[in-house]
Amino acid sequence: MTYNFLTNKTNLDKIQTALGPIASLAYAPPHDYPMSLPVFRNKPKTERFRPKTEKMRLYVHIPFCNYGCSFCTFAKGVGASQDQMTRYVKALKKELEWIEPGITLSQLFMGGGTPTVLPAPLLDELLTAIFERMSDDTSKVHTVETSPDSLTPEHIKVLQKHRIGRISMGIQSLDREVLARVNRQHSTEQALKACQMLVEAGFIVNIDLIYGLPGQTHDSFRDDVETLSSYGIHAFTFYNLRSNERTPIKKIIGDEERWNLVRLMDWRTLVKTVAQEKGYSQTRWHTFKRLDTIAAKHDREPCFTYDGMGYQLGIGVSARSQLGYTLYRNTLHLNSYLERIENNQSPVDDLIPLTLEDRKTQFVARSIGDGKILNRANYVQAFDCTLEQDFGDIINRLRENELIEDNGQELSMSELGKLVYDLVTVCFYPPTALEMLKEKEAVVIPA
Image (cartoon, rainbow, N blue to C red; front, side, top):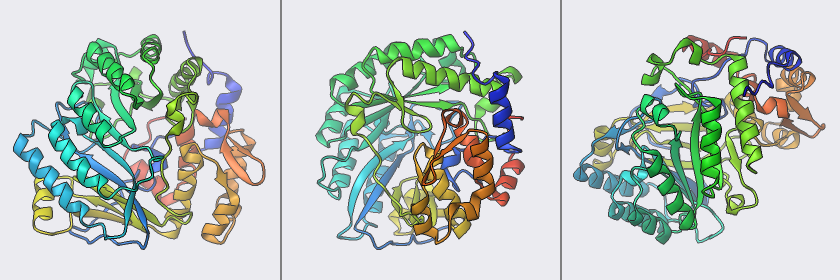
């Protein structure tokens, strides 16, 4: 079956007219502006700004994996020893001490890599140190990532002990041939067993699936969603395959598997159709939840003000922080990270000072670019000017071609716009940012 919503010529013409020259995909998710661009400045050992805030959101990066997937762009290492992991957890606990007394943590997201590659006792030790600083507000849902091949009953006990409410597990596909082509080494049986354990343990369970993988078909994707939903999965995160200079998969995908506008829209129409058939509602650009389940309890705690002043700390290799009006990225290298922390030096390697123009684009990217409502009054409050003064022509073009909806006070993506959420977001990028994307050969969807 072909889900050819976009092959309707009227819709295709509207999208191409609205996007103009922006028929491209950034090689990182566009809502993550400006971290979606190659604009970090190398400033090793820079001390992070300390915003005057009573709380912070925390991201923790665990760079260990059992194997390397060919589509992965994240900082990771395969084959770490127990001693290396122990040393790393000790360093993370020490980096936590950067947080000044009196500041509480509001919400945790632990990703990687694969956090559950850590042996259960080490994960317990790390979570104990984190939750000593965590707010007592039990309504906040904390997330830890896992994989089918690393999760054990012992890990589940540790996660329950520390009131982790949500587990996000990367499965990507249940098709054995597709898994083999992307070097995904878990089996279908392992994935389904892990789902069963997590659901029975009472977690909000989110499953990551990728669409557009080599050898994948619409039918196999539909089968994956139908099978996983039958296990009581509460939410899905659906990602389109992305490739750039850091992904080995870029070398193996054929021309017929590369994105063009019609192929991308066919896939996204399929994704949305199948999700809705199974009772999942789109809540972000890539997230679909069963809102009649415990998944409705999960939301992300704010970590920035309207004008872009941030209060999220990232610890660990490659972890990113937004503190004040600056983005920081820790060193990408494990040994460098360990040595700096152990010698009381900043682990930061790179930073992005946010200009006023950056913060305005970031406001748009974090609202309609991330599946939320854009409130005009909040924009005026943040920047002392109207949205139309900065983006009037873009808004008119998108509205006239029915990619956004506008009631005069708020903007949101239309149903048509949701199928090209990332391309719509890129429309709001500054000209200099668009040039950077072109230079990085990020234009992968020809008009």
